[in-house]
Image 1 (cartoon, rainbow, N blue to C red):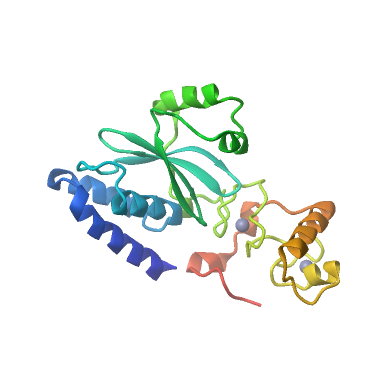
Image 2: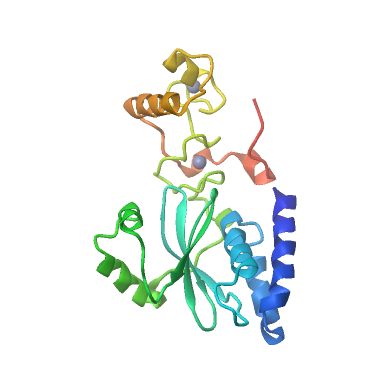
Amino acid sequence: MREEFAEKRATILQAMEHTVPEADWAAAEDLVDLYQEDRLGLTLLDQFYSCPPDAREEWVREIRMLNRHRGVFLLVAITPWEKYLYLVSSEGIEFHGSMAEGYLTSELLDFFGYETAADFKAICAAVDDIPVYEPLRLDEDICPACHTGSGELHELGCPVEVCPWCGGQLIYCDCRFEQLGLDSIATEEELLRLEVLLEQRGRIPYASEQRPGYLDEGSVVLLE
Ligand SMILES: [Zn+2]
Ligand SMILES: [Zn+2]
């Protein structure tokens, strides 16, 4: 994971040569360094510099966090001239336009718990009240693998999720097969059935004590 991050950082710095004014280079690089071990922060910076939202010279001065739900983060990239919305998760990134427009689809408004489009717009207008996005590696309240928050459910398939039947790691024990009466899970329909069974049993939300030491060493795949 470390190497992957170092590579990403190098890619970002290379792309920055085209968009960052020389006078601002040091500050722009400081921000990259702040997020050098944060997957989502790096994903955002990589996207910003490889596909700049605007043609002019621009650089990210700050990243703020507007909202987060089940591992999906609504982040704001703040440049000297503009504020841009990005939807970021461990699955990828989507650009959501200028924050001044304050537009999200009704599906996303629902997902993040905003009552109305006007509510969201009002929140976007008060950018100073929006907290800075802290690098995740420093934040114990976030699952290091799927980035869900404390008290929230993991993304299904997250290696940190605890099995509610045996207390082991849900993706490594055999409980899911036993519960389904199958040797393997091959179809979407079987996966949905498993989700129903898990919910009936009661899925175990993320808590910081589940944070496995080995994840800090860098790998999510492993251990029997
Ligand atoms: Zn997780
Ligand atoms: Zn189990």
